[in-house]
Image (cartoon, rainbow, N blue to C red):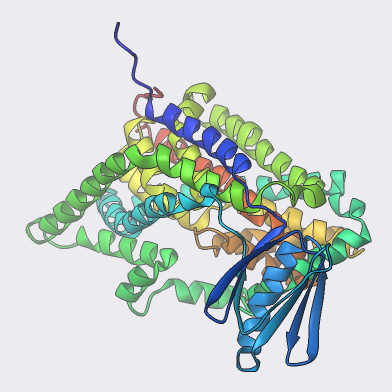
Amino acid sequence: MKIPRIKLHNKILLGLVLGVLFGIIFSVNPNKLEILYGGKSEQIENWSELHFYTYDSLLKSFSASKQLAIIKFSKSAIPVYKEKKLTVKITFPDNNISVLENLSEIRKVKTIGMIFKPVGDIFIRLLNMIAVPLVLASLIVGAASLSDLKHIAKIGGKTIGFYALTAAIAISAGLVSANLIEPGEFMPSDTKERLLSTFQEEARTSIDKNISLDIIDFLVNIVPKNPFAAIVNGDFLSIVFFSILLGVFLTQISPAKSKPFINFFEGLSETLILLVEKIMHIAPYAVFALIAATVAEFGFNILQSLILYTVTVIIGLLFITFIEYPFLLIIFTKISVKDFFKAQKQVLAVAFSTSSSAATLPVTMDICKRKLGVPNKIASFVLPLGTTINMDGTALYQAVAALFIAQVYGYDLNLVQQLTIVLTAALAAIGTSPVPGIGLIMLIIVLRSVGIPEEGIALIIGVDRLLDMCRTVPNVIADSLACVVIANSEGELGEIKPG
């Protein structure tokens, strides 16, 4: 009897489920710490109180089980008091006291759930390794194959217009859900103070980056002074601009001179896509490792404090993914919604586990060409552009987060202020790099636009990793959706192969 082979997307799904279970079973003990001091290491657990000293001066005290708060404080205190030999004094329930001098680090005690994380990290690095050269090569070929500037402007206009439409709906959905549920109204004051205390240092790190949004500067900075520096730094907007220009003007010189260059980049693009297909064979193991490590390290305890906020964001993300996008698919194409999402299984799994649109781009491009029937010249143009400027999930999250923080602080935002959030979140999403965690930094711009205390991001940092994974999914699905919509509008959409 021949045993049927398990399809890759089912293996990835299995890896995801097993990763969650493995992470739960081997989760980090919240009552345990590893302390590195004076060249030694010691593990402690179930302490009553922990005090930080420098010489005879008490810096701060923590009661039992404040693992996160202790780690956060130590990270900020150790560099400051390095020359003063930071000391910790630990009191246990049986009245035993342990004094550890010359502190160098305090961290969680790793479990087997976190040991496999390097496998997932290698997978992400492989995909990121491919992303920049793939965007460069694909856009040059895509722009060159669109034959003339009018055609490029037409496709570009349709693409940007479609992304603007989906972003406006996404942000509006976020504001509606946040206004209806009002998650910030139900947060107890003691929970607010605990979250602000625990994550204030991490919040300050993001705030100190001093990100601002100036439209003129933003447009100017799209044009790279040095395209090679943009490629090295992974500056996607500048790479897109340079690639499109290079592709366009390759068609303006004689074919004898341009053809070898176009063939080179076409060959590079096809080689990278083939490499993606090979890399995807380790995806089930990488997804297992990434999810297991995330669940093991962060667990679900923090959700107890932020469950209503988390649910509000997820409801908005589910709405745009499974109601807005299918509706637009039905309006603009004749593709079956079931077939479209069936073809997206690998994309969904990679997006969720990596939290990165850029890392998912090679997979999205492969699926759009091979399974959704999108021709190379359109996929090579629309997808890199979408990865750079389309962040529906991130924009929705920023709208909900801004309203949540405003509600916690007692701010009653009027219609004009909420419309300001819509506009700022849309512009911030365009300027957001397609990498994990950047949405939190860009949220500061949204908060500043309506005068909400930016320190409030400390309230939501605890669940940002989970929501980052969730919001990446609609980000990449919208890219695929735009791809098939644009291809269909040009009469160039091929046969779909969802299996």
